[in-house]
Amino acid sequence: MIAPDDDAADIPAAGADEPVSITAYPNGPLLVRGPFEIRTPTGVVIPPRRKTVALCRCGVSSLKPFCDGSHKAIGFRTEPEPPAPQPPLPA
Amino acid sequence: MPQARGPVSTNLRKLISNQHTEFGVDLDAALRATDDVLQDDDLQLALFMAYELRYSGLQGIDDDWEWHPEVLALCAAIERLFEAALRERVSLPPLPAPDVESVAAALFELTGADSGPSVSRFLAKKATDEQAREFLILRSIYQLKEADPHTWAIPRIRSRAKAALVEIQADEYGGGRFERMHSELFARTMRGVGLDAGYGHYIDAVPAITLASSNMMTMFGTHRRLRGATAGHLAAFEMTSSQPNRLYGNGFRRLGYDANVTFYFDEHVEADAVHEQIAARDLAGSLVTDEPELLEDVFFGAAAGLYVDGLAGAQQIDAWTAGHSALRVPEYLDLPA
Ligand code: FES
Image (cartoon, rainbow over all chains, first blue to last red; front, top):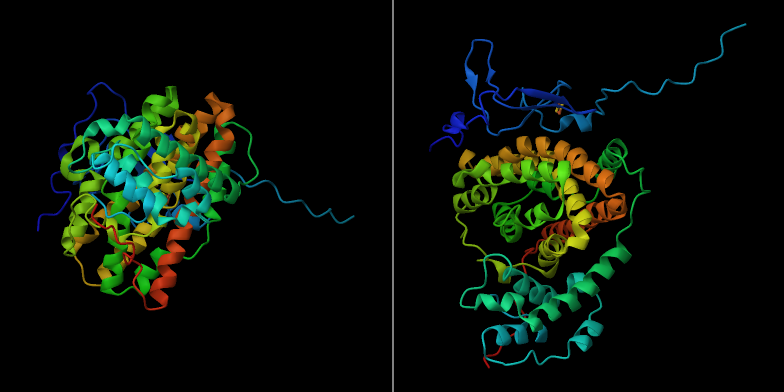
């Protein structure tokens, strides 16, 4: 059987001059758009399966480097929690 | 062409296949007679058939019927009852402020709280091969035209929300590559387990609630007035998709199927983790920012999607746990004219 994504590396970038953009979505992944390339530490290109990808930044995805939605299950927060009420200082 | 399931679908069939010159059923009486339009096989099938004329058509039926006044009147009458039932039965969360942050946060909360019986957990852990196949048959009604109902909204909304919807839909359509279109990936999964992936092949085997789920999307999509509901429906759909798809994939792997069968689900884990972000913020959030009067409908569409799919899922699990098939047994005899 032919692996479904064997031919995926040739998805054309929208335009050579287009900058890569990275958008941080609150409490979730980083969305990357533009003519980017994702590589392993040894330089092997990971074929992108789509034009816009979501990179995990919560650490628990089972598809790393991509997000698989797991950040919701662990209650990942990128924004500071509202401060808990402080106990009064001992006199 | 589906088999009729009662007087309304029978007469619609006869009308559009030119066996009758007029609809010939007291539609008002048929509408009054139903005790639950969501579970009414006859009405949901009639609406489904009329709607199919807006998609790829019905075999042997003249395309002109799509805009025929009798067909449109039939749709309008069923839609009124259908929408009213949904609005009455679907409960909305407290509505947030009409800005991107608040809308996205409220959608994540709504979809995160959805804790109904889970077809995905059943598939992952318990389903037999037969039940897994039934699952695909039930899903095929929508998945073989996956994305089409929401595409209707593209020309109906503007600016950032439109761009976001296009970004999602382009991915649904495989970035313009046939073999990567999600509907085509689903067809491959069906063929991989030995099912017929022909569009509409299993229509007679699915219960009313499955048709209602598809019809609801088409009703939202083909009415400009309901564009907020389309955006909300898509957002909720995407936001409750990644993890269930991981479980579906696991279920088919457990049953011994290879990547050819599971690729559709594995692809959705990754794709929908992208889509949910775009749908919640850039689509639903931006739409409400531009058109604050759509706020309520965004949440109506989201909650209605969760509600109807929750009903459908509960029915499947009930049938399977009782040791029955979740498919419909045709009981209405469509006698030849
Ligand atoms: S950010 Fe989504 S799984 Fe980590």
